[in-house]
Image (cartoon, rainbow, N blue to C red; front, side, top):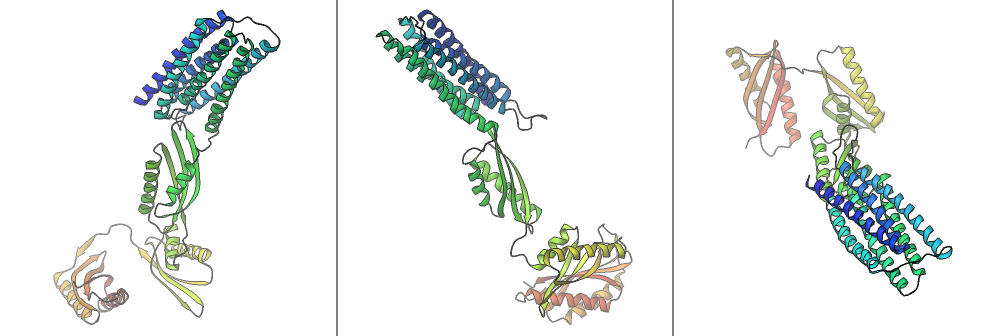
Amino acid sequence: MAHQNKKQNVALSSVFASAGLTAGKLVVGLLTGSMGIISEAAHSALDFGAALITYLAVRVGDKPADDRHHFGHEKVESVSAFVETGLLFLTSAWIIYEAVRRLFFASVEIEVTWYAFLIIIISIIVDISRSRALKRVAQETHSQALEADALHFSSDILSSAVVLFGLVFVAFGVTKADGIAAIGVALFVMYAGYRLGKRTIDVLVDTAPEGVTERIMDITKKVEGVLAVEKLRVRPVGVSIFVDMSVAVSRQLPLERVNKIVASIEKDIREAIPETDLTIHTKPQTVNNETIAERIRIIAANLDLSVHDIIVHADSGTTYASFDVEVATQLTIAQAHELVSRLEGAIHNEIGNEVVINTHIEPTQSEILSGENIPPDEEAQMTEIINATAATVPTIHSVHKVNIRRIQGNVFISLHCTCNDDIPLADVHKAVSRLEYLIRQRIPIVEKVVVHAEPRH
């Protein structure tokens, strides 16, 4: 809100300053007959119109985004600057035409008076003051409309100086100097119009600010987890810079990690370029170091399937992949087989048909099932069998936290076992699998056994 008030106040003060200068120059120009001063009056009249447009544009441009203007209203300032550019060139054309007519085809009496010098000197002082004030606020608020207005007043300083020198020469009898001064004013105005027009058109056609694209690209590539920047579009709208980009990330990353990468990109870019409004898309990409097992997991996840116990081995030049596929319990065998066949086809499409796939369909229960305790004597008997069975597996040191439950008529057992700290994980896994198998063999009513292995210390 403070920025908005500052912009509107400085724009409104420029309107009053331009109006006063226009009136003063026009009166003096008509009284003296000086084409240079009249051209300055026309220039100031243009500045008055431009300042008024700027004031209105700043008021409209400060409105926030709404349902119809998703990027805000700040481009209104650029449109106003474009209109000002057209007015600059029209005024310049008229000044040059009238000056050439007076230089070569008509004779006009010019009266050089003290108030002619006074109005030009006052004009220069006012222009210096307004140009500095507008430029300062334009830099603080990043307002293109105020910057255009500051450019107008800066050109007024130079053009007024040219007219002042022209009056000095006329006072010494060089009457042609007034027309030459007027052409000089017109050239300054056209140059200012060219600079303003180029900047305005760049904004209206969404030309990316110089160097911003490269900075954003460099910042993004330095964020850990970003493989590449696939697409980057930068669009300036007033003080804001809208950025739409797509970055490639490893498809192995979980969603939480991807969100952290996006958050890091946003943080780093906004620290370097605070006025950015970012939209970041992520594109999952295959990385060169993906194993076959990792690729199988990713392909299954893309089909909303879960897989486990993946074993990949090679024999005589042929690669074999076997794994368990979890499907909903309520499916029929035909429905489950169709899902798994689709998974196998997707794996062959990505990895190649030379991989031989063997799958085991395993039902998985998604809802929470109700369980109950088994009778104490039955639990004690099963616990004794479990301890005795664990003692037959060399790698396993002891078992504890044995939990035996009956769920929908089936017995489920979970327990913890300890192993020496230095035993390789592969050997522990074999021992755990062996223990689970032996328990199911010795207690036939057991539906499932889950063994959690942990180090002794």
